[in-house]
Amino acid sequence: MHVLTVELTIKPESLADFLQELQQFSRFIVQQEADCLRFEIFQDDDDPCRILLLEGWSSRRHLEEVQLQRAYYQPYFARVHNMFAAERLLRHWQALPLEQG
Image 1 (cartoon, one colour):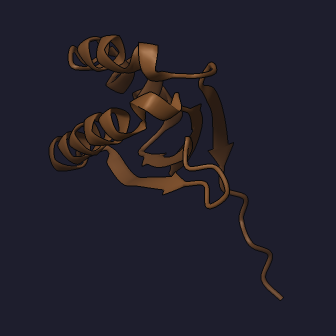
Image 2 (cartoon, rainbow, N blue to C red; image 1 turned 30 degrees about the horizontal axis):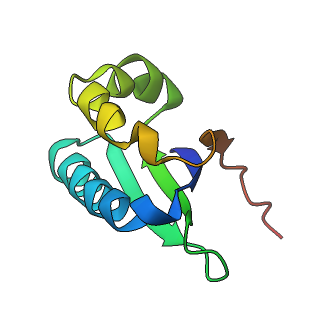
C-alpha cells in the first residue's frame, strides 16, 4: 500500500465550508474508487484550521497516473483553492517490513 499524507492550513473564515466540501469529496472517493484503501481526515487539536489527510492507495503509480487525473479533481480544487491559507504539503510514504525476532 502506498500512503499519501496531505497537510492543509485553511483560512478560519473558510473552515466550515472547506470541511463540508472535503467530507463530500472524500466520501465520494471512498465509495467509488476501489484503489483507495484508506482515507482518514484529522484536525489539529490546537489549531482547528490545520487538517491532515491520510490516504492509502494501491500504488503510487496508480495515484499519480490514474487517480489524480480523474475529471472530478479539477472542479474540487477550483472550489477549495481560495480556502487554503498556505500551500498543501504532500508526502509519499512506503511501509517498511517489520523485522521478525
